[in-house]
Each structure stands twice: as C-alpha cells, then as structure tokens.
Amino acid sequence: IIAEAQVAVIREQLAAAYREGARATVGGQLQQLGGGWWCEPTVLVDVRQDMAIVREETFAAILAVLPFESEDEAIALANDSDYGLSAAVFAGDLDRAAALALRLDAGAVSINDASLTAVIHDAAKQSFKFSGLGGSRMGKASIARFGRQQALLINAGQAAPWWFPSAAS
Image 1 (tube, rainbow, N blue to C red):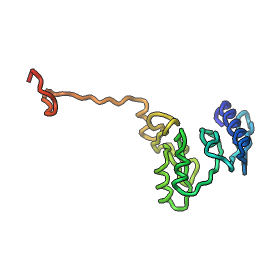
Image 2: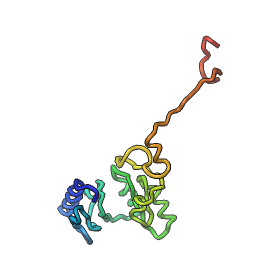
Image 3: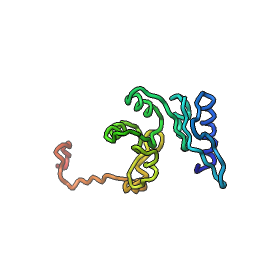
Image 4: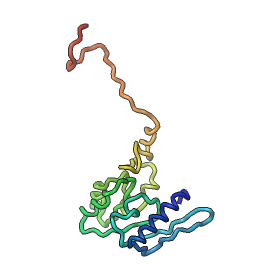
C-alpha cells in the first residue's frame, strides 16, 4: 500500500463491509511488513451495491463479488459508480469480453487480467467520472497534459461569405 493514510481507508472499508454482512473467502488482513503495509489479496462475498467497499475507490487487492442475472445487469452494476479509473472483464470469448468492455464507464479496461492497465504504460487512457480529470497520463498523448491547445484564427483580408459586410468593403 503506497501511503499509510490509505491503510486507514482500507481498514475502515473492510470493517464496514464485515459489519454489514460481507465475508472474506480468502485474505482480508492488513499486515505491516518491512516498514510498509501489505493487504492480502482478498475476495469478499455477500456484498451489496450500497457498501463502501463497492462504491468507493479502495486501491488495494480486494475483489468484491456481486451476483448478477444478465450481462446488462452486470454492466449496470459496474457503471453505477462515481468513479471510472479502470475495470476488468473476464470471459472465455474475447470478442464478447471486448463488447462488454466497451460498455463500461472506465478509462482503461483489462480483459482476462486484473491489472494490465497499471503495467502497460504506452496505452493512452483517461480517468472517467470522479477518478480524475484531464487528458491521458499514459502513452504518447500524456505530454499534452502539460501544455495548452490554442486555435489561432487569422483573417487574411478576405471577406468571409458567411459574415455581415463591413463598412470598409
């Protein structure tokens, strides 16, 4: 975990999830190791869409599993969030996974992997919703974040046919 302040966020999200009926099928512990913090890879079940562990960005190796009846419901659940940094789709059919990925409100979507968006830095991607504002932080397009684009429009002396005639004409 990159910052100690995030440990408190993760700890509270896990505690709230447990109080509200969620349970960990694996992991669920935070450990202090070598001067830093580590979150065991965790799978939570019996979670609901209204829980903080689902609704807020956690930035830890925690997977909250929500049941769904259809692909449309799964997409609706995933998009029912104020955040859209990244997402992942797992499916045996890559074409089907790609079609689902395009429906997600996330700046980057990994297919059949949970973290490709974090390790492939040359792919331009943006953060959607409240996950971040502005242009891509990755890939060649990222340099544009440090500049301003300006349109320079010059009238070279010819009257535009769509503009009102001036007295000087």
